[in-house]
Image (tube, rainbow, N blue to C red):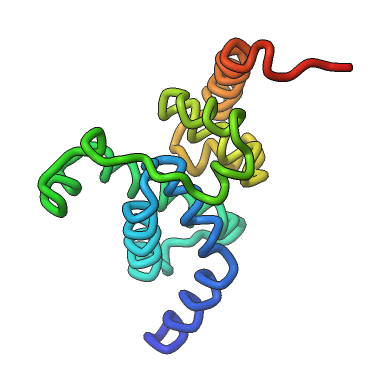
Length: 166
């Protein structure tokens, strides 16, 4: 693939998945500015690795896998300390459109440990299958099922009294 084809393919991916990728990064990082940085970094990594997209692999799962790994790298702190001289815990958590719209359930999701939060967001908010999540997170499908089940239990406990069936 030549540079012009790669550029066109990157533009297509950005149009198709840009806003979804930023939302995913926001959920992983809980900071709007960092989410935009992570999404840009993920697209840059995707552009460099376009030739690694295997036939039969969904581009969405491939791209979101890159984004999740980019966010994990950022959360580990070395990247953030180099960029901002602080940790994520020192930064405010600004409200985003998704948080304002979904309110308490989303706050409960955002409070989950990262490994559960990633699985929930990819499955329930992004519509990924368990197999796609497994590829994106580089874990076995059984691990995804386990994380989703544990996340549901934690969310049920966190949201007790908030929702009831009529």
